[in-house]
Length: 88
Image 1 (cartoon, helix red, strand yellow):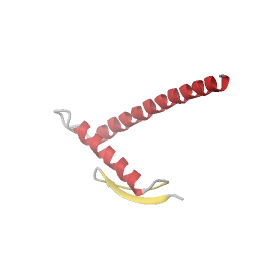
Image 2: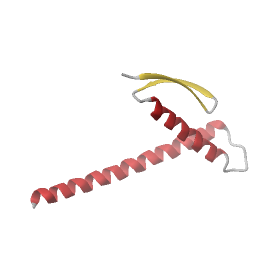
Image 3: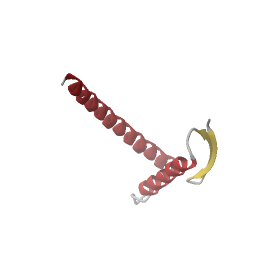
């Protein structure tokens, strides 16, 4: 059953429901805020919050895609090993 959450992330109030516990939501919020600070502090020019959030979303999406690719490769390798074991 989804749990309701109300958070303030980067100065924005957000309300949502998720099938996650409080620790997962807090960890996700912390990751977003850390990445946002890292991106915002890297340049000399002031970048708008909207652009920083887009960069943040792109970076997290790229991380997810890479993780999914690695998972797929590991699953394929496990399947190959299981077939070798079954054939022996």
